[in-house]
Amino acid sequence: MTRNDVHGNVQEIFRDIFDKEDLVINDSTTSNDIQGWDSLNHIGIISAAEKEFKIKFALGELSTLNNVGSMLDLIIEKLKTE
Image (cartoon, rainbow, N blue to C red; front, side, top):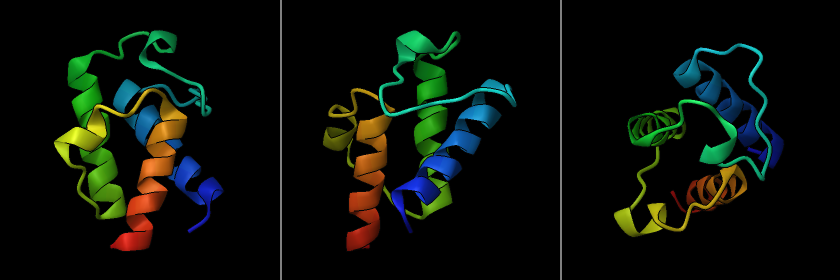
């Protein structure tokens, strides 16, 4: 799976969570950039990503996620090892 594939799937997760079909994310997108991105929606994003990609995030890994790009990198890393 390429980084573009992962980005596309994560893009759809964000659109579903925030119920905005025109929402566009990029590597530098953070919670400050999307209205309504609170802790509950953050959990929803993480949970949906785990389900979509059939991976599990460790609690310590989640604290390293500073933006969407770091999330994509972590997902790609996990896909290589699982």
